[in-house]
Amino acid sequence: WRAVSERRSRRKLSASLRPLAPLAVVWLLGSLTLALLVAQRRIPMEELLLDPNAYGGVHWYTGLVSNLGVLGWTVAAAGGAAGAWISGAGHRAGAVRFLRGGCLYTGLLLLDDLFQLHIVVSRAVGLPKSAFYCMYLALGLWWGLGGRAELARTRWPLLLAGVGALSVSVVVDQLVPPSPRALLAEDSSKFLGILAWALYFCLTARDIASSVVAGATRARPDRDSPGTDPSSRHEPAPTPDSSPAPLGAGAGR
Image (cartoon, rainbow, N blue to C red; front, top):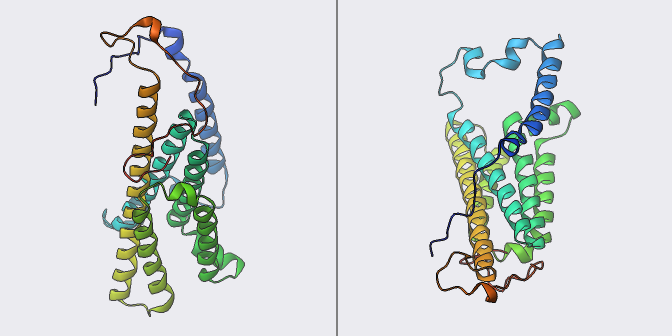
């Protein structure tokens, strides 16, 4: 990497205070949500506010692997969102659609794992868990096949490994009778699948960032580079998907 000079400057006070406006909106929405939860009388307030381990009187490590899995889903969703934003900055329209869809799909899996939606909703509507698994499979195929051109530019074996491990977890859950060994096989494969899924999105975001930065560096040389003739600077307008280089080693645009 070639050293690049610092382009940022000290922010004015007005510019530093500007982010407080969206913060006020976020705090308002958060306060309204808390007010609604506290105002309702059906569910005890303690059940909504306290940590499950503290409220239930169980050990602090109860549900440790499950909690780590939720964090893994969160990292994956954040990686997809970051990659989509960077792709937009680099005018990579196809990568934006692919990573945005991956972020939304991962967010759905995150919510399902966090709130056990496939169990809670299936009991409420009288559907088997397999119906939810089929729905998630259909959505995943729609996302993956729809973005197969972009998927081919990424480190797709990582995603394939994650899908394979998660599939093992579902098969064990559906076909193997409950037992300690079955529980270990189901949750272990699920956790390993989440790790592979999160690693895929993190590396994809890193690769697209490297590709966009490299393209911007080629298009706009450092103004402070010694020996650069100011009259020869050329800053062409960016065009969507104009970078000729793939995103890193086997990475997507």
